[in-house]
Amino acid sequence: MSKSVRHFLDISELPLSELRNMLAASTAMKAKLKAHEKVTKPLEGKTLAMIFERPSTRTRVSFDVGMRQLGGESIMLTGAEMQLGRGETIADTARVLSRYVDAIMIRILNHDALLELAAHATVPVINGLTRRSHPCQVMADLMTFEEHRGPIEGRTVAWTGDDNNVLASWAHAAERFKFKLNVATPPQLAPNKAMKDWIKATQAPIVLGNDPEAAVRGADCVVTDTWVSMGDKDGEHRHNVLKPYQVNEKLMSLANKDAIFMHCLPAHRGEEVTDEVIDGPQSVVFDEAENRLHAQKGILAWCFNEVA
Ligand code: CP
Ligand code: NVA
Image (cartoon, rainbow, N blue to C red; front, side):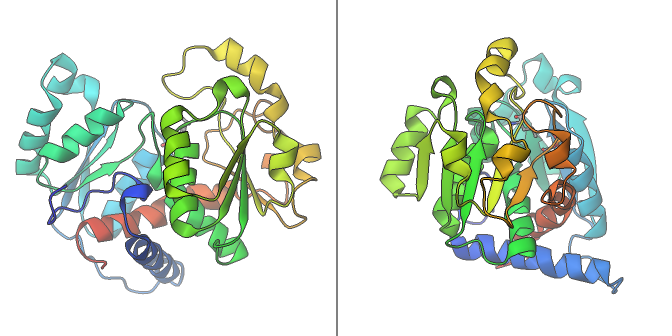
């Protein structure tokens, strides 16, 4: 990564101090917005290209609105409409877009393609979700946890479901922000060897297991996600093995009394979570969705060197 270009690719790639600065900027900008205070427009004249190889509601709208609130603008592109869809390389796409725009946000399943884009772009690249990780989501989740429950350091978060991109970013966050992450996945859908090796190498406070009840005991936050992520093909098999991992009132009752429930959305009600939980008093899912906007403004400000 070029020293002068600030890419936001993964939480595990960045020092805690800079991640903390982004979150502090997000919180300050959110407070000003809520108070209807006059805000500065640090990204005036700047353009963000947003490339979506896959569908999105939150990422697309929150980045677009965030750029506008910061004084800049965004261009929405889908991979299929670009020459990328007809075989132009990621590297050439990166070189060309860098001549037009000031930053690129991309949602692409192939994580290596994201890394290639960043390697050849001369402007900041932001990971808007790959098969491997979803760091913008977890920055919003950290902000949401701390708004509701204070500093996350030393607290316990429980994940129940399959191993996926959102879990990977939670794992990266657990290592950086020093909170405990209890993970319950079916054995067939457990984190892969690379993740297990990373946990071992970093000594991240992450406990992997297969029992959702054991994972949520003592948790301050219970998190789950869809059973079938974008790019997953074996939907029926996943539904069968993931049934015991549903977050319902019984499972929530085993967590700490004041535990909150998080889900990146979109939710599949009646599958990974019941209506009673997602609509219940412990759920903060819409604060979490809102915080995508605020957290990403902090990330954008950092990419543009407006935050240390
Ligand atoms: N949580 C999330 O990334 O939502 P979208 O797929 O709607 O962007
Ligand atoms: N794990 C989900 C997240 C969607 C925002 C997926 O990759 O489809």
